[in-house]
Length: 387
Image (cartoon, rainbow, N blue to C red; front, side):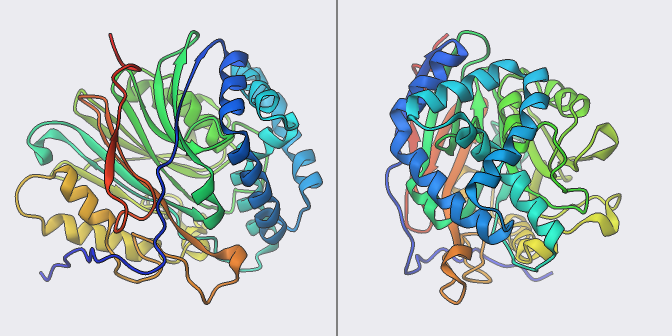
């Protein structure tokens, strides 16, 4: 069988900066307020960026987006009232309206529901590539990694947030300012990578939004706890969650809106490796899967990363992950994604950040922009995870 080596030369247009790290502590409202105070400028950029994007993809002005976001308030508050408090504190600290913060945290539901409703065929910016490797693949620890690809304005919004919660677990998340959580790991050695998915069930029905679900996973001690949380909640968005643990556990949850019957489990391959992009791998979804229509580069990225990992010499290392995530096959819509200048500015995307995590040692490396151009730098989590 022929193999494909990752192409790792840097390309023109790659952007990189050192994304800020902030620390928040205390009760939910206090944490949110501190988070908002430290990232208010980035939150303002995010609101402006999504005002443009959601007008384009959903056909709604920001006032309508804020109004629609309020439909999710009761479902979130009934199950996770402290997350509502975090968002209220965020709004106070950033000096924006609560509805603005809520809208940022339900932007996935609004955007993909808008696509399904209008069927106008606008492809969203290239999305995420996630990789996990168990000790039998690495020779030592459990590693997980991902590229997060999204709108260009997000180069100005990413932040690494260290949460020292008095009412939950300590965790670190690499996230857009104003969102509750995204990619990250917690003090128990549980880590999350994630990929957007789209099905014809994504119609914006209120439930637990994607980014609130990610925040809930940060309060889980084990992968089975995370599966239980996902199973018992009425989720409002399709999404993929690659969940690892320092105990040497790796599982993948593909979810559609709904309850436990809309969850589909994937496990590592015979080599202890798990890879996911932005389409359903289970056969159970069938014609409901609209992911490739929405993100047509997803199958190409999946094939490229699988082939490059099969071709790797020796154990899977952080270098292996970084090389795979720097691949430019199918450029510009590659694993390491660069803006496509043939697209309208509002539709252009790029790899905004690349993340590698060692779940045994609770360590985190971040490439601040395209990994072909930005080096992976370790973020110091020693204070956060001190016993």
